[in-house]
Image 1 (cartoon, helix red, strand yellow):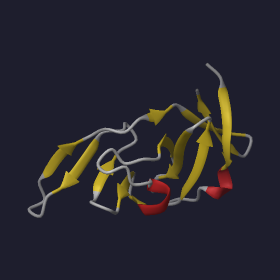
Image 2 (cartoon, rainbow, N blue to C red):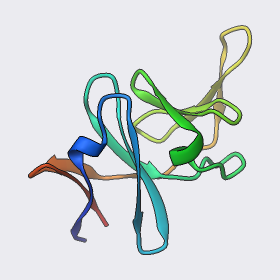
Image 3 (cartoon, rainbow, N blue to C red):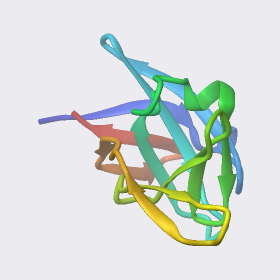
Image 4 (cartoon, rainbow, N blue to C red):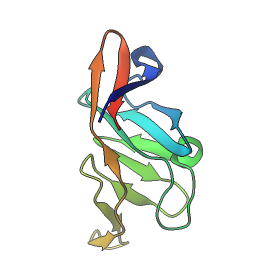
Length: 108
């Protein structure tokens, strides 16, 4: 395993999303309202929408705006029903990440 630099930290402000690629894997780095960075697979497991294009940060979750699946930093997926009930959905892969020397790094 090795740490790989994927993006400058200033490209991911609070509430922001940045796209990255490692080998053939599309990733997104996003920063929640609390300032913590998360790096995960870029494709929503529902219909493969790219979160760099159709994702939005809401609090400390990333939301796929195609069908409103939500993912926490643990990668667990949910969708909020009209009555407020949270329905469990598919998960997304999360990569170990850290912020160091002005950049975001992932362990691969």
